[in-house]
Length: 345
Length: 292
Figure 1 (cartoon, each protein chain N blue to C red):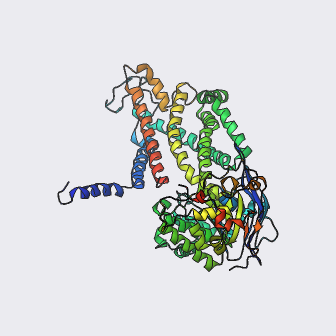
Figure 2: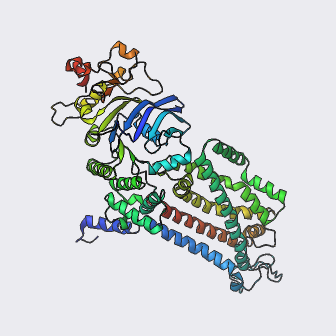
Figure 3: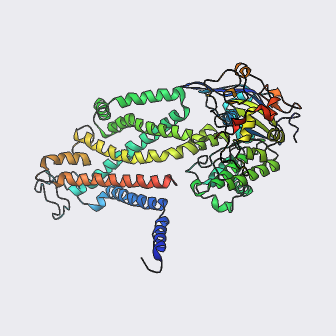
């Protein structure tokens, strides 16, 4: 599947991003480590507010500081041993667009409303490459064609509000790949779009990722999307990675109770049940984390020990599958789960 | 209403007409009317010697307080027998100079300061905003009068007083909208694409902010004309023989009941300029903020 161990494009080690707020210090990302290999797509899944987006923004150096502060190591191919977190502002600015780029969740607001679309794509083309006006325009048209915008010469003159959501996301993707980055951070790129358009955008991303040989981090809360797109998946909960494995393993044989509950809460078209399964309770406030395992208050399998000790990521099989649960052997046994826990309304 | 079209056809037709005159199109019309009014005012005051043969301060003691539509004096004469029509034309030069001269400088300076403050944030923002608060704490008019009184009454010193004091409104407006634009995803996206701060501010934030500045500037220009007139009235701006519109209005106030035209016509001139500026502001607002 990948040779991520050989030469990772991105290496994140013990990344922590804390944010000072009036309510206290929010531990948005708390000790996250992962790698993204050459041409690999890593999925980041989790509920809202679990730190997925903050992880991406921290890697791209986009978290406002203050109030946010980060520690840890982020290494990117082409930057040797340098920690991206220590880059100066001008270096960061060169990094973005050229080495890594981002696609955002809401295509409605990510384009400048008072600039013509063509001008925005041309600007992205020209930001990292000295080109004449004509060459820039040609490149912009090529890019817009590449991402599937019909009659780009004409649509260039339109304003963003004249574009549909899907078309805007295509434009934003065109802008993101304009600098030929090695790593694309896609932060819920399809969440704001309807299902049919979602599929088109995801296929486009997949196609571009293959053609350009990019690596990608795909943030999503949609396990279906993750299953379709990703080589490996990291499940995040309350600022931590709770389970990390290749997609087939994670979806086929998950062993962290949170992952299992998440998969079980997917609606099943064939099910006779009138109820949707959900996970009881709410994720913990990141200013006031519980002792022990952060999922314990909601975990149907939690024991007293779970509430006392924090567990680290443990090997859950062949070294490539890790889970932050010391009972990861038990969780796969159906009889370990109490009957009602996932049958509630 | 035709029977062939039926209700849905009528509805369609009425809305199609509306969508043809899109917002930008309507904005262009408003803008054009505004430019026409203001342009005419500018043209006639520049071409004043070609339009009227009277000097604005030529006294005619034999014909004081002539009614409007008197032969040779379409708008009448004032208490010194000066032709009101030509005084208004010449006075336009002074008042329009006040409008443009005072407003343009403060708008540019205030916008730059507001953008810097809002985008930089942190202590830069704090320092600038405390200075702005300091200025806001004084009554604006009193501050202007104090400065002019200190420098000595003249039109130029009035400019200086306005420049020193009214940039704060622009700084506040720009800063507020800059803070808003900074939080927008397009700013984040621009930064994620590796654009320089300068580019983000000038190409992405400023165009989203500038429409508010322009609209305010149009109101402010009218305000500056009124301010100039008020200072003229108080003897701190344009000095009496000058045909400045505010001076004319204050000259006419003693005759308000007997000779209404002395104050009314310069008043109408101020209103016309005001309407011109407002229409330009509205038109630009529609054109500069497509799809809003």
